[in-house]
Image 1 (cartoon, one colour):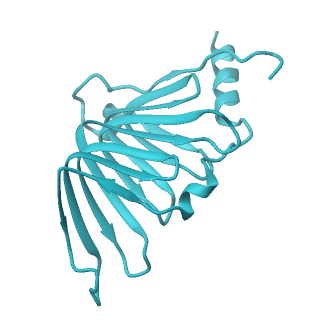
Image 2 (cartoon, rainbow, N blue to C red):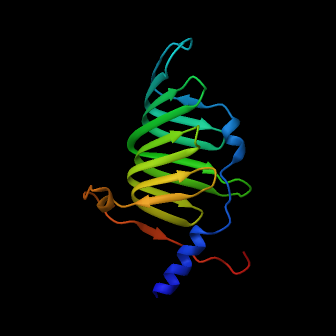
Length: 176
């Protein structure tokens, strides 16, 4: 039984990489919200910080993040860092070359456009096709589709239903 689990996990983690939609990175970011506070666009130093609250939807190409609140920081080079919070924040992005999406949910999501990385905190869940992982924390590299999952026990926060990491791997057809 342990051997079967190891083989299944190795197929999930060592499958040939299929990237997140490559064109998304070069698309503009659109934000919708009930309220917004945006700092001066003509700043000369430091980050520009914008705060969006109430039914916030951040869209960039096929990537979509929905939250109660988003704090967006933009550095002088134009890279954006977003922290989204809510009772559950959702994330979705099309996989490059496939008619399939990666979806995630958690209480807090942090997006870094410089590294093309998303981090999910508290009640974190990530679904790729029909496979799914759950834990207290998930780090997801959108370029390579590599993810790391940590349970709350390992993070030293032994509360909630996400004490341990849970993974569901669906069987694949032999034709695939």
